[in-house]
Amino acid sequence: MTGKDRQDRQDRWHWLLPSHLVAPDGTTRPRRTVRDWAVDTALFLLAALVGLVAADSSAEYSGPTVILLDQLTGAAACCALWLRRRWPAGLATGLSLLSAVAPVAGGALLAALFGVAVRRPFREVAAIGALAVAASTLQVFVRPDPTINAGIAILLGFVLILLVTAWGMLVRSRRQLVEALRERARRAEAEAELRVAQAQRLAREAIAREMHDVLAHRLTLLSVHAGALEFRPDAPPEQIARAAGVIRDSAHEALQDLREIIGVLRAPGDSGDPAGGNRPQPTLATLDTLVAESREAGMKIVLDSTVDDPAAVPAATGRTVYRIAQEGLTNARKHAPGTEVTVTVRGRPGDGLTVDVHNPARAGPVPHVPGSGQGLIGLTERAALTGGRLEHGPAPDGGFALHAWLPWPA
Image (cartoon, rainbow, N blue to C red; front, side, top):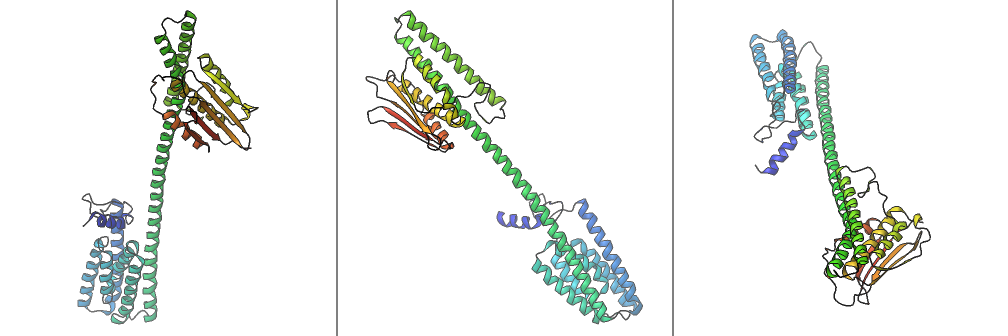
């Protein structure tokens, strides 16, 4: 038997028992639980009771030999009910044929029909039920009961078979519904775990982008001014003190930013901002502060903004503009030091915001500063998440240009 066939058979059995158990060796024959034993015992006793009533009734008009055969046949039919879980259809078919000549097998037949209705498809249940009705009708003429009218006997047999079959199908429908609800609950739990995993992955990616955006700017200042001190040991004391102050301030800010991000990793807040913390987040209104800080570090920057009220820009959009400008200034400081960087911000509600950062090519050799290019990739993703776009690449004059458009709802 292939694995697929075994799984198909297992699926057919899976909903049949309240225990939903399968044999330990992987076969599909289920094991009886305590509840199963109780149900089987109750059906056995009920079938035996019905058989005793039928035997007592037929004893009034049957001879001793027929009575003995009826008793043996009834006992065998009741004992055969213990096989109804393994061979429900075959047992019900056999008992239907037997009941045509042995009224004492009627109780066992009803129990077997109940098992078939619970376990087999409707087409098979209908066929076996029709056979049972035919056998019940034939019994009226083969073993007539003089105390009951033939029409009433036929009608009574038909009603009993119909009621037992309907009861079994109702039980089957209920079990299928319970199993469907269980499967839905398992699927919902799996989907919830998947959503949690995706949320954690998105949070990690957001934190990684934020760490790069926040720390790259500070560490670049450290690298540039440390390099200046290394190559200009004879610089005037004022310049050395100024560079040392920038290094100290940048290191302090970098450590504070890193401490806040690590704090978010250890105990994330409810704000949903991966770079949360107690410090206010940068917006378009703080772009002037970024430019001033970079100018103090020795950069030449031209800021051209036509946004009259930066505070009116949505916080998420303004923070993205700030990060784009920060990344552009960081890249210009690393790859084109000494050049004049132009930062242009245009836009109004309904039209969106455009951000351009441009720096010309540096005259002379460019000092090597390590970089992975992950900052621009992260900014492109950040802009796409807000519904905007970001483009970057070499400018016609040999420099580097960064252009972004972000939505600004009216």
